[in-house]
Image (cartoon, rainbow, N blue to C red; front, side, top):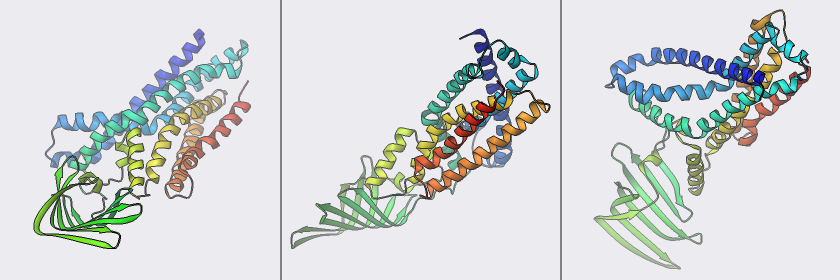
Length: 361
């Protein structure tokens, strides 16, 4: 790497992290102003707010905005270089525009790599603590889990029906557990009440009835007033569903969750599949927006940095709008998840190529 490469990489990274710091501080102030009344009313200490919430809020808010930070940073320092005729000097020295893109790509790939690791592993771990804090002290009624008329496959050969489940004491009413073999019903356990006994997935049935089937023969065991313990692949957390639950899972956890849901006959996993592809697509967005920002800001114009920033922010806003639009279609099953998430990157890749071809050489 030449000295000029190191110079550009240093400028990119310094500007990027400075922009991230400024926007992070603004975001914290706005978020605190919205939640300060909840913090005062709830039995929570200042150290809990800092350690459990804001320490984990910082990587979360940055993960949402890093692609936009990358474009703003590139436009900001590249416009200054163009205004000071530094880029013209580089081009006049015989350096091609494509070669001049190298340090931008090095810095962009470095930031994209950090974003990739954060999206798939670090940010979800922080979100788990942050969202647990929010659900405990702020959004107390955000649980959308189903508790009435629950039908669920526990595994390919076991199905459960629960008429009503009470979360506060983990009690299920009017439960029916069916066991299958070769797609034939072999046994049914009914109970008026079932209570969670703890791991590993132990439940206690009260006032039960067991029906066993073998061909045309049927046997019945009545346990009125009695209890029986059994193991089934069902836990209290299976009845808890938050709108932002996918944000709390690392990517390996998401794959396990999707496989588990599909094994139970539940097909509402589209938003979780979209989340996996989104975490991979966003780091590539940083690289694409880096190229676009460089191509826009490398030309010295009369409007200077202001014009470049306005154009960059407009393109960034358009990208975000298109991204949300396509993700909505993917979540609603109008598009395959991978296509819905990657459409904005594909379209803006063509924009990046067009701008590079039209850039000042």
